[in-house]
Amino acid sequence: MEKQEWQGYVQKVASCDYPIPLNLINDYDDWKCRSNVGRMLMILKDIEGAMAVLATVKDVQPDMEDAPEFGLSEAEHKVLCLRDIAEIVWRLTGTGDAPIIYLNEAYRLCREYKKVFRSADRGAIWARRLELQRSCGAEDAALSEARAMLEAEKAVEGVNPYRFHALKFIAESMAEQGDYAKAALLLADAYKSFPVNEAAKTALAEAEAAADAKERYAMYHHCTTIQYQPWEKDNVTTLEDVRRLQERNFARREAAKAAGEKPDEKGSFQSLIK
Image (cartoon, rainbow, N blue to C red; front, side):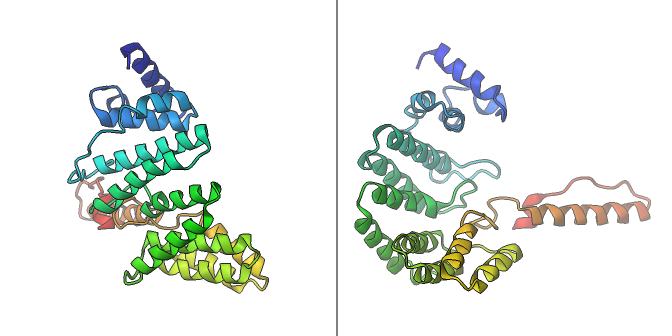
């Protein structure tokens, strides 16, 4: 890529409505900068620019032991780049074979990386492959893969994005066939593997109480569009974490004032969510 072309992309990303700090995007020799630029160009709907930049990343081998305290790991950068390349290829070709190759590699990295993902739902990366198969007329194969995933993950208790997305995919297929009652039951089962908080419990209870099966399914499915809690522990700070941190810091400041000491303004989100 020519330097002038690269600088043009950097300028576009740095001056958009949601600019990224220059230190995260200006170094072409740092592939993670190229990852940031390419993915932001995708968000800005500059598909040609995104593909030009992301193509320089597709063969990079990430350090699978990289686990920074803040920001994305190399594995996450690579997974997100592969995901976006798959979407670009899908938009340009309308065929599933090539995009699925990239998603297969992204899924492999998701499984191989044993540390926390701060950025993405690993189950959604896997399930996107099924959605493309369905769009290409291979829904039966996708359903078989979803059922195989359920079998493979049946011993895993608690939050499990792969089990959740497998059940969600099968439920959507049932709904397309008009079997809303079964689809709703499948989504209710799926939420046993979903990270829920009090707001989610309330929404799910309302869905369960709906008398009409189609409405019940629609309410359950609407809940799938809301990320009530992070998929993986410690990956993002929730609004509840912020509230608790504010309360804790307020109590600390008041105690310091009462003791005639200078209050400490510092707080750590990380200490709250570990």
